[in-house]
Image (cartoon, rainbow, N blue to C red; front, side, top):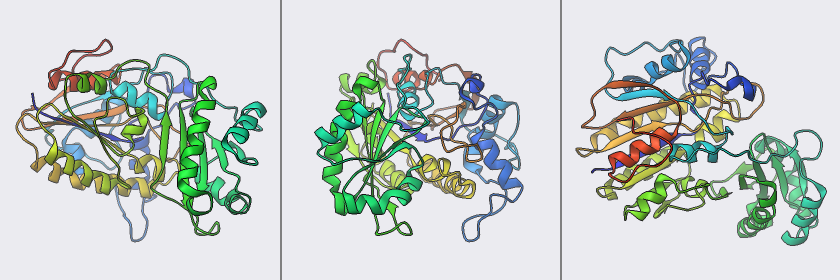
Length: 406
């Protein structure tokens, strides 16, 4: 029994999902297309990065080999390393959505076998009776938006009117989600969070996975900026996850970033918030120093998805990957005998793909630690095997949906 550090690089897919066509994502490949653009010079940005995608540490852990397993191709400009130092492979998702809760719950050993509710993409997104109830019970005179939209775009479009009128900006996407943007000062952060809890209760009948608070600051579209006070209000997972099983066994589950929100704070024993990938990495290292034998440290690195995938920013995504990769040696140096680190993702968000939504892809699963010997486990047929790997390594009873990969 040692410790496990489970890091989700939010949206870092590697292509090749066997059911991608059913989601309209046949050919989507987050890693592959970022590498292709970088190799062609289309990933350069002055003062940020240039040249081929350079991920030497994840490559040495099997990332390139995992990508080849997933798609049959080696990402452009990324040579295979001479030696691999970890246990590696790819995993396919079996949950019916390509959203954050589905991906994370399946990673934690609980696939989502039911269909989420979604709002229509054409015309007004929310039914009139829902809007009426939201306004009445949320004590607002109306809502703005009421459509599918990019968060930054809709804030730029309606932000000034929102400040004048006090009406919250409400929008959705192809995910099962109801998002609410409001100004931290003029509307108030606490009021926004309270309003989201009202909406959370009202959308339960529509089987909506998440209500997301999107606070922002600024005076006009040129300086509107979303803050780090985002909050997700998720429904509970459909059955106990590995987090619940660890808590029941008396272990500590350190949830870093938005992990607590994703699991509706169920199975979480210690919560740490941080804003930005590097701050999240720092918080994870701090948890590493605190974690005891048998504990799980579970971190979501949201910037890959929120700042770069959804905004279709190839240079930004590439630079964020390179910055994350550069931190891995510091993590490795701090590991104790028996510790295991698992790097994976919850879905794809190919920044070269049409639209602004998630993409259905396989994900990498890269595992390393002082006691692990290099090998490939091939392609896992569910993310749930990741959760069962955690369970077995930490010495708790197995769950019903997977098997350990090590």
